[in-house]
Image 1: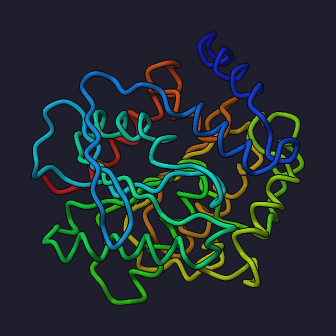
Image 2 (image 1 turned 60 degrees about the vertical axis):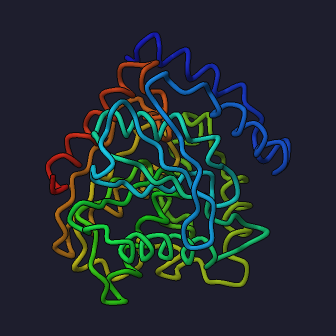
Image 3 (image 1 turned 90 degrees about the vertical axis):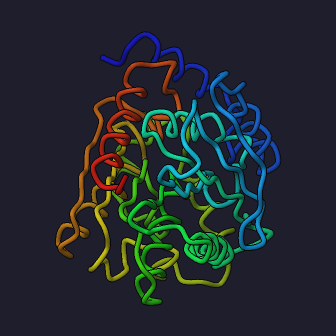
Length: 297
């Protein structure tokens, strides 16, 4: 049984406007207002830019200037989300994992369809390397579409022959824009965040004329060999559950070290409620332990 605190979070999420019912502008505003909670007193967000895109250095407490880096890509179906909507979540990850987080404001569809987001993500990674960042002290992370973007960036980085980061952490990643997972139907009544109509709309806006099984749009179809250790977590009560399951299975088959967990009763990217619900804090702490294991200090 989910905690009382998580049940309260579910009620709040269920009251948010849906993409299918209210349209993109309203959904963007709802995610913005719902995620833009006040930062904890120990968290700072310093505006910057990287590879021509706005970004923020987010860190908690007295984390050192030379601490390892988590390059983070927010979720939102490639069409929603912002630095504001995910800043508190990124701050929680910084605190738990003792890392500096570079939170990237990548371009969104439908104004900027595929491959704009991938270009921005890889550009930010390359710029970090060019600045002298040691890849053994660098990880990629993301939630939902941001998790899919992190996977696409990993594949692109490997294919370019660039040094790979030490690890990646993915929360409920959207990696199959062809929407083939059975959980899209079997979990439809359980998921208060995502519905089939919304997924179809977001996929179409992001893909444009690109095939849904393009390996950088839907990295579950990519060659996954040679990638660094990857954590893949999802909730059992979300329509994207099977994206994570398929990805974990294909990573393992490709010989990649993967740490995968399906959390009972949890919804899409439940980790954003860290500090407000115990399951969410446990999820963030698990991510922190994974990063601590794989990032050089």
